[in-house]
Length: 370
Ligand code: AMP
Image 1 (cartoon, rainbow, N blue to C red):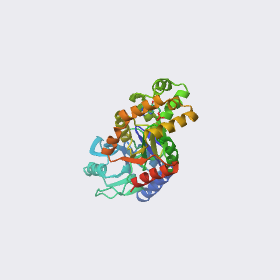
Image 2: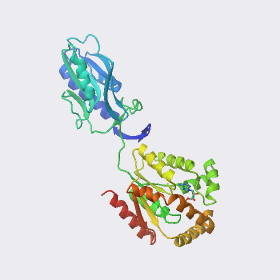
Image 3: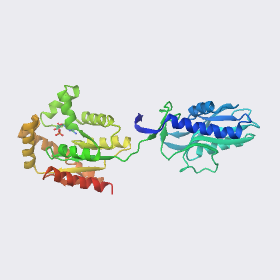
Image 4: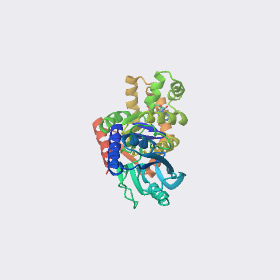
């Protein structure tokens, strides 16, 4: 998996597959044109690599030239096709074969056909290395095709995503796999961490506990740890700016994940909004927020028990625990409404055996894909 700007791409075609397709095209074209000297016209910028390798594979007399058009901006075709470099001179009476890197809707092709229709060429042919036959809706039949590919955004081998990726030897496809992103919601001690351990195995998810990340940083004496410690020791929340940035870094460290379990995040309205915006920028979203419900008496008992084993100072003092509950009621509980408005809020009884609770959570998760 590679990252270009904000998007992730997975390997799609190897260098070898591309070279084989090009050799087949060169052989097919040679059958038709080896007895004359055709002019191959590459369409810049995307086709520069294809033209180079194609010419090396085409072992007969030929000339080469280029035109330059522009129609893509970001991931979608804008429909605006500008001519930036016009048709070459002296093509009258000659056979011209256009070398395109990719043909999808056919808008650029239409403009190319238009460009050449005003010239007195002997013959005009189109050869495209990649062709999205599913979405092509032009009138012109493509004469030579390297590889018919599905309608997915691709980069590499001359093709770019906002100018990055052209220098890759292979072709990569935009990663649009189905992800499950869950927010585990609930007061301290509700069992979020315990349940996350089971769910992450079951659904192959990456578990991000902001509390764990803070504790890791405290243990390792990082700057972030020192800052967070003063808040955590009192049972207060760490400021949003710090927490949001840290969470985003954790997500970015795992570009291959099939999804995430957010445990202990978001805990404030600002964090919830930041999470939505951040995930949206990565073509991701929160699929469900699942709250583990349990009453304070049960939770205090659980936390004090945990404190004996874990040594967590914030689990050993009833006053600190109560402060954490207060922080929850004040800042986190209102998020229920935020997710209810998005129809993403699910409540699960958090009292019972670990297995029973896992089953309740699984039931909610399985219902999501229906
Ligand atoms: P936890 O392990 O989730 O109970 O978190 C322990 C402590 O870490 C909390 O009491 C907070 O001080 C801090 N913390 C964890 N997650 C967050 C968050 N999303 N926002 C602010 N502070 C957090």
